Image (cartoon, rainbow, N blue to C red; front, side, top):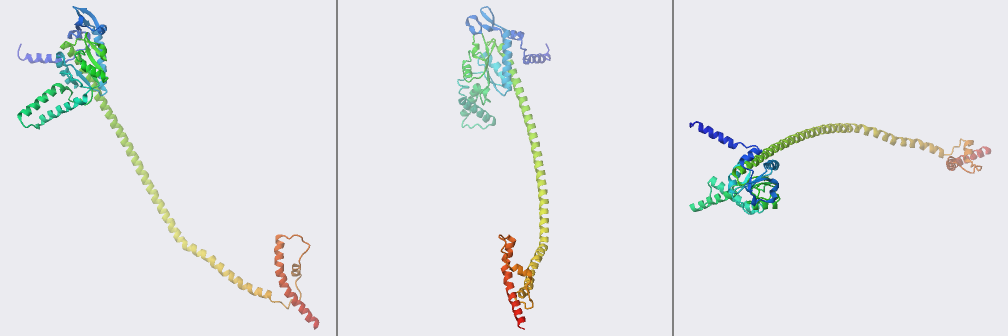
Length: 399
């Protein structure tokens, strides 16, 4: 083999390793997922997942493994698609490398060294240590580590290394995960107990010596083989990646919908402001016209006021002059009536008739009453006239 062919073979091998095996019976069989524990160490609750017994060891039914793994992938993808987080846990030697590698590819959180008691149930105590790790890493990266001696600097670097060992996979965890993926629930009893206490769903690889009722989605399979753990972890990581892509797409759609809604609201606000400005301009114009009209009316009223005053003054002057003339004319007439006339020899029959009271009428009408009220005055006038006439008759007889 030439040296030029060697890189090509290596490239082909890496491409084959990166390619995810299909989820079928053949790929699971090749990875050795069907091998179980010795029959003397089995858990009776795993009976429904056991296909047969060979060489004093149980064989797992791979058809049920395929079905369970598909259901688990759908569930994980749904949770991650809704914005949740998945924590991958595998601290046994066979699972440490696979868990870290697949979690890094999928961008998920992981624990691959040791599950510290209270990692989730006492998260408020664990969180300050995570913050300390982030602070020290940032200080070393920027070169701002405050240390008086070289020994103190070495102690800080050892602290960072130790914290990274236990918390390196959860440095970005600010809240509890929404789902856990666990390899070998018998070894990770603390993680299972804390998740059950917090009611966090568990997806786990269960071997023939495990209790499948302690987890929500049990994947029957070999949890002692590196190839088996790697294959199942690859499929879970694929579900996590698909869920993150779906969440990102949903987030972009939501942002686009919000942007469109904001644009519509902005357009509506602009239209409303334009209408309000138009109404304000129209109202201002109407007010201006009304003010001009009122000003014109007031000006016309002021101009018409002197003429009306002159017209009102004329009747008043006429009314003041007419009574004076009337009184002046009436005075000689009254004087003439008051002086006895010697030339009149006899009184008029009409005046006499008026002066005589009528006794035949029992009741007098208002008009008659008014006439009777006038009679004394007429009688008073007629008495001097009668006396003058009588005096004239006497003088005639004497002659």
